[in-house]
Amino acid sequence: MKNLLFLVLIISSTDLFSQTNIVCTDSMTGQVLLGKYNPLNFHASIILNRPDSIFNGISTRINPDTLKSYVFKLATFYNRNTASDTISQTTGIGAARRWVYSKFQQYGSTCQNRLRPAYLQFTLNICTVMQHRNVIAVLPGLDTTDKSIIIIEGHIDSRCANVCDTASKAEGVEDNGSGAALVLELARVMSKYSYNNTMVFMATTGEEQGLYGANAFASYALQKGIKIKAVLNNDVIGGIICGFTSSAPSCPGYGNLDSTQVRIFSLGSFNSPHKGLARFVKLEYKENLLPGANVPMRINVMASQDRAGRGGDHEPFNSAGFTAIRFTAANEDGDADVTDSAYKDRQHTSGDSLGTFKKNRTSSTIDSLFVNFPYLSRNAIINGNAAGMLGIGPNQPDCNLTSLGSGALRIQVTKQTQYPEYRIGLRSSTNDWDSVYTMKGILIDTLKNLPSGTYYVSIMSDDTNNIESLPSIEYTAAITGIGEITSVPKVVELLQNKPNPFDLATYISVKVNQNVEYQDAYISVKDGKGVEIQRLPVKLTVGIVEAIFEHGYHPTGIYIYTLVIDGQAVESKQMIFAN
Figure 1 (cartoon, rainbow, N blue to C red):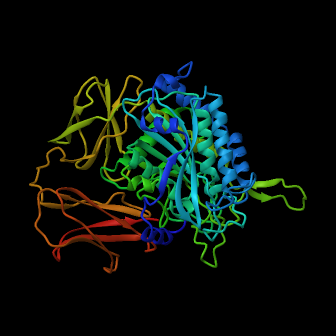
Figure 2: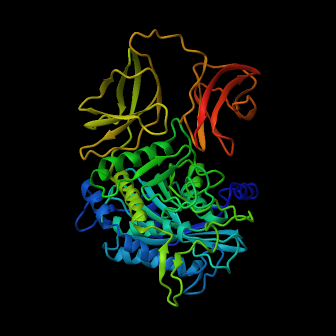
């Protein structure tokens, strides 16, 4: 969407959940979202819910050519601005959403009408238009015990430089025809299978003016008491070409191609359920899909919630307390700063089109496409595999940790003790797990020979199908090496930033071991010349306290950060900005 300044202006004048008259246009679908239905009424004649059937089926049935046909069709609507034409059968947001609805209907007819299309309709003044609709397709789960739903979303609206421009061509192919196409294809493919949790495939509107369609669903979920297990948001997910500009952290320079990496952005660091979901996505890819992948993909768990100064439809769900992440291509064509007279990239312009056309011909043959459909299909497979495993996976466990000294850590499962195996994720200096250990047939185990340092530990249930749950909350464990003497812990400890080195942003943590009486505390960040460039306020409550440092446009190199309490420097550490 637009730069952060625009989002701040929107938020300052409009409450995040200000949409009114939010309704699901199909009453039965609304009941399914609440978990108030008889699952037997939606059973397939042949239930396909084995994990290998699901991830192998998704991997083989996702079709680059089908994705291409969706993107080409979305481009024909000329302008999909949230406030564009709703009457025409061929142009505007109305025609586009009716076409998406008809595709959901078509897929429902091929799976015994188990996939239920509907609109989520809401009232809000967006560019003087009052009524708006997300398009959703709901696949009821096999089990209503949990009642949690899983959402795969991508916004369908497009834009040019002016957020209310409904006349200019705005095909919105990369942003976000690619994400909307991914949602459509996963609805087509995943509706063949069955899951314990209800699956929701959603094309949102109003993203470009302020994330309003996602806000509407998040608000609706809060109002109705709908439980959400996870949200997978896909935005700018099919392009592989780096533009002249690109919102950091992103591509290395103009013309760079990257078709083997995808970025996952998520809120928080220590004990963030969003980061836990991102790590889960990566683990499921590595264990289910990577062994048979013709083109291996690199999944990069990013430090920040989104790119610098940008936002997406996962954020309203974060604000509402739901676990949500964003998938974005490694390379972007533009940082969307269309107010800059020197801006010459495609994003948020009429240039966000299908591609370049052959010269010296009267035909409309496209010479090169801006969306790479094999790449888009690989990203769809990653999404579908993660959602599918979430949909059939076990419940989250919990555990107790005990540092035993001499490089040993004891783990005891205390919740959801019925499973045959448990997976232990350990991380130290990055957003990703350094190692994943397996506990088989036991509830207490000891990890030995760990290097000394601070670890962040979470646990996952692993059921008889060898599918993991979402990770538990994270715990910290201070490990001492063999022969080391355990020192008395400080009242307050400044920890090493993570990740380090970093690109766009890094988290600086303070470990508070007991209550502290103080008036003011902050982290001072200074450059290599000793000039303070930022102060990050912190509240010293017992546990791990985090502050995020967003680097912005400062030079690469070594920076010093210092914990300051009531004007006194307590402890300092170095960190490295490398990109």
